[in-house]
Length: 84
Image (cartoon, rainbow, N blue to C red; front, top):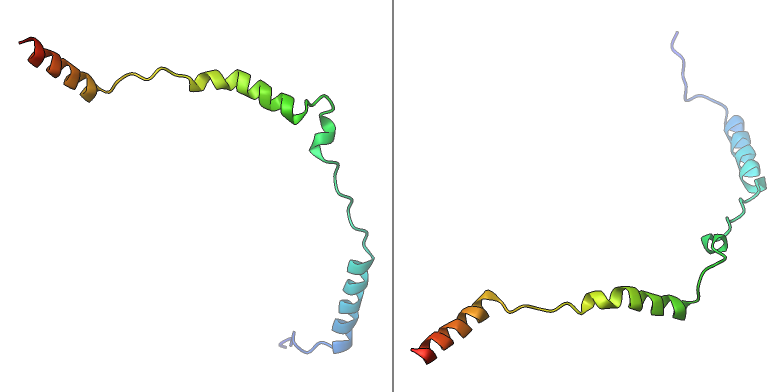
């Protein structure tokens, strides 16, 4: 005997839907977690942090640049032509 799965009563489905609505709308919403900044009470203010960053990493930007190989070649060529 073949079962017909599509012949269920509509009252059962409507009751299920109503039960799900009640369940979803009566659940309490979860509370938002505390912000992560609350964990760091010894943070420095923004101006101090920017100043410390510039002191620490500002020196790295003052790298002495060396001339390219082509520039060195041109200087050597000019010196050779001038001296010969």
